[in-house]
Structure formats: structure tokens, C-alpha cells
Amino acid sequence: MCTVCGQMFCPKGCPEYEMGGGIYICSYCGADIMAGEEYYSLSGEYYCSDCIYSSRRTAGE
Image (cartoon, rainbow, N blue to C red; front, side, top):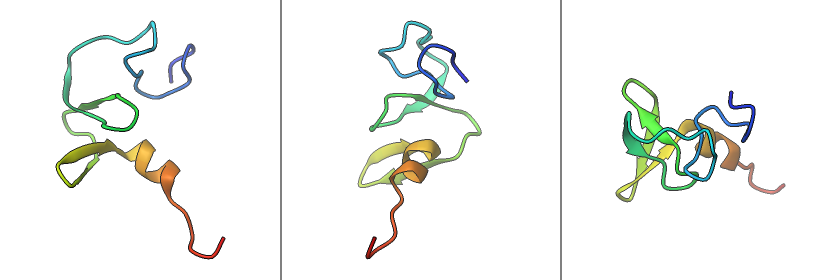
């Protein structure tokens, strides 16, 4: 985990971000989605697992 931004994969705005290496870029947080990493493709956009899991909600809450 990055000590600057606190994320597993630094978004483009983080000073520790290293360009390249990702197969896709998360449409929500901008993190690289690396080869072999789980991701979600929704309506032609790519999302990393962290963004999907952090967006989960239960109906009625």
C-alpha cells in the first residue's frame, strides 16, 4: 500500500504514481489494472476491484 495516497495502486494524482505497466486504467480512481489482476468491465469502462467493493451497498439501508 502506498504511504502517500493510501491505495494499493496509486492513482495518477499521487506523486508515487508510475506510468505504464497496466493493461487497463480504472475509470473511477485512475489506477492501473495490472496483468492478472481482477477487474470489472461495465458498459465499456473498466473498474478495479477496490472501487467495485467500496461502492457496494445493500438496498434499504
